[in-house]
Length: 54
Image 1 (spheres, one colour):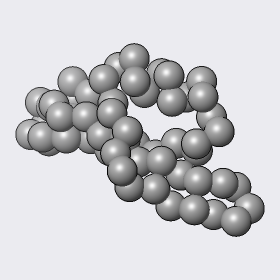
Image 2 (tube, rainbow, N blue to C red):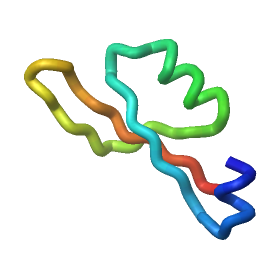
Image 3 (spheres, helix red, strand yellow):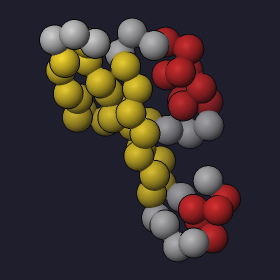
């Protein structure tokens, strides 16, 4: 995140499967917030979109 910030990025996005609670916790711990955007896949489940302002 420091490298993205120093390169001029204002925000980062990350995706995570809705059933992957461990990864969701890690993203939340470093400051990512889940958005209302999601993508449903019949095989793998729902992908959640998260973002962080830098």
